[in-house]
Image (cartoon, rainbow, N blue to C red; front, side, top):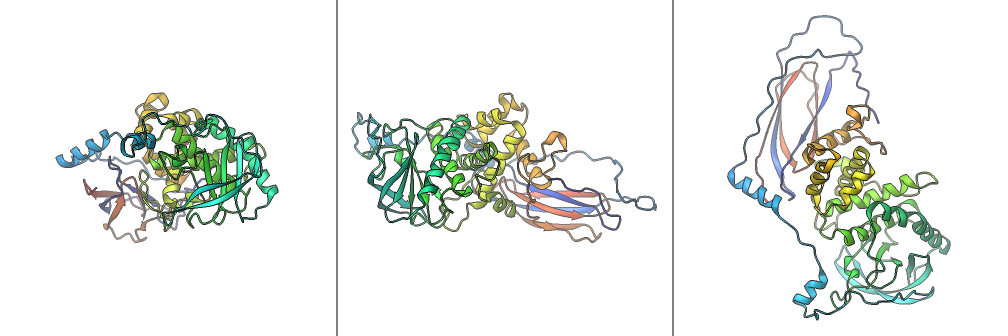
Length: 454
């Protein structure tokens, strides 16, 4: 999507100042900021204004020098940057803390059960809104080479749609996700190459579906494990079986399963960004045309709240607070794919570093040496505003998305009465877009906090 940059002779020029906070911290914190706009002493000749205004080049002063961090803030930043998050292994933890024998096997079955259609079994499920666990019975109603379709007893779902959805997953989603993100653990904890998709009720009103890594462990290590590679679909929250959002949710949860096997300690925001991207990738590559998979609109939730910290995640999502975080992570990954291509994005997904460290390592590996995640973040937030591929080799736009632009946080009035001042906060790795209108060149001053509480 492009923006017409021609200015009416009757209106002042409009610019948007992007205020963003960059730093090492990964906590959900804000900095205080003051933005001041002052008019420059500039007297153009009294000539008629042409329909298309072009500002003549003028000398720009030296770039500002950042104020050094206080010693204690620098020490904290370095400690956070050097922190290593160990992989969570419930099997090892059960041996250390639950008394499980060290020789306990990591698999529940060495041979595939190859369940026949009509099998009924008990599943442990969770209401994620209420943090409540309970058991249900479900029946196997359809199967393919790699998919089991289970339906909670008492639910009435259209059998034809169940079969069509399973066949789409088998023929398109399964190979697409594996080719791009890698393989899940197979034959896995149950010795069965099938993935189980359980359709159930009462999983939480904010939940469309979920993958639980607990199911990848034997029940001796995790009592509520179903001991199979599986994910859950909330039939009361998702739309109809086989519709685009349903298909997208299956692609999303399958990516989580793959990522767990290949990089268990990945940061939540990047993992979720990959899962949202999986929904888009399957739609991009579907041979019958687009519209078979739907991401669900998280990108618009972010564009409505651009002062959302990219590299963090809310602990609980009872009120739907995670929606803009999904959108931020998705747009960042989609932008990375459009700018650097599939091979670079696959390298980022597979990198053993986590979060922004993996972004830096991937860029430095030969994809864009000398470019840091800070540079990329700055380009990305501008792309979210102007979305114009004609500028600077396409680095300020999206190839696959047509965005409506972010919410403008504040607008300076159309008056020429400067200076004007605005004071507020902006999140770490968050963005405030401030629109300023003037016919005259302006000097902008910014003052921000140099440390925040963790």
